[in-house]
Amino acid sequence: MRITTGKYRGRIIKMPEGIRPTQEKVRKAVFDILGNIEGVSFLELFAGSGAIGIEALSRGAAEVVFVEKDRRCIRRIEENPMQGEEATLKHFQVLGLDVFKALEQLEKEDKKFDVIFLDPPYYEDMAKKTLQMLAGYDILAPNGLIIVQHFKKDDLADNIEDLTLFKQRRYGNTVLSFYSH
Image (cartoon, rainbow, N blue to C red; front, side, top):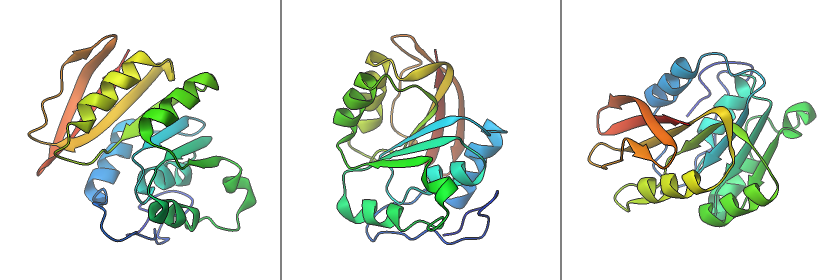
């Protein structure tokens, strides 16, 4: 898998075995919809290979935090295509925690993110549970948005506390749902 655009375009993203990576067309769609993300703070939950966060760095995100508990995946993220580029490496962090513990920690640290992307395991109702948790924590910037990549049969609510669904795009069995305050 390669980075599609930006400063690191064409570099290979190392993939851990046994994960479901975000397809290139879906990654491209996410960033086409987001537009210019230079200077934004970006949180990738259930990071897996970190492909989305790495794309965000390539496209100029000011900061990317990856949350992933699987040690194999963490190693791959840390072996990312930007190795050796100190300027970029200062702007990303990998939290090797369960997503729910990480959300609690990020709120305690008073972190705010302009974009929160989550791609939880399919078929486990994790998209809904994570959205409910995100609604209870104050880590989304006032004009920020949450992007949920999920299976087409996952039933996500239009409103979860103060989060409102404002856009959905479907790519085969994959759906991107966009929420904001």
